[in-house]
Image (tube, rainbow, N blue to C red):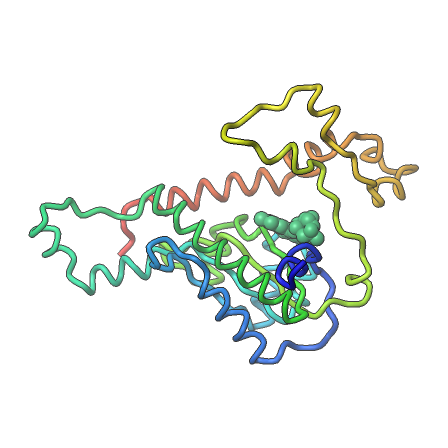
Length: 266
Ligand SMILES: Cc1cc2nc3c(=O)[nH]c(=O)nc-3n(C[C@H](O)[C@H](O)[C@H](O)COP(=O)(O)O)c2cc1C
């Protein structure tokens, strides 16, 4: 197994950090690795906000479903799907005269542009994760950055076509985090990877393929916690899919899309 594969296989999300700050050179190395990620048409349809101000981290910790460790991370990057830079550059480049020459109808960013920019942003983020891991720096994605869009937008001064898509917290892992058992996946490769075409799984497949991982937290809490009696499907449905944060995500993403597709703000 080569070093890259070893790093990918051993990575775990890290949510508790030693107090040690990341040297500037390490941060820059992580950011440079992100910027070298594959990018649709090499357009880099994303931006990265390096959150250095403690009050902004504190606010993000609250807005992202109250996750205090965000405020304690020494290095926090927000990844934005960003067409604003290109729209501004298009204007600067006088694209309207090019449209006249080529008979093109001017347009604004739409759904397809949004999704492509999301891809760009998250691929860059994952480069940052892998680079950090290789430097001994742990990381954790914060999907909840897509909640509370209006407040996140105001906090980070986001223009119309720059939408929050992912956030990463980085820091040196505590010993406890390094010793933690990896999180098992419910579905193994046979349930996830298909040859040539999609195959919906049936009841027999689920019975055979789903390996129920040991759930420490559930077992520990069994005596007092009714969630402990749920099977993994029920558990995920209750704890994730129908939880308040999921409902807020849906509301917030509708606002992101409404805003992205709305009339140009200026
Ligand atoms: C899109 C995405 C969003 C996530 N959001 C959060 C989050 O808001 N808070 C958190 O603690 N972990 C978050 N995680 C980390 C996952 O919980 C973690 O990757 C998963 O439990 C598997 O554990 P591992 O990364 O240690 O293998 C997120 C991961 C991804 C990929």
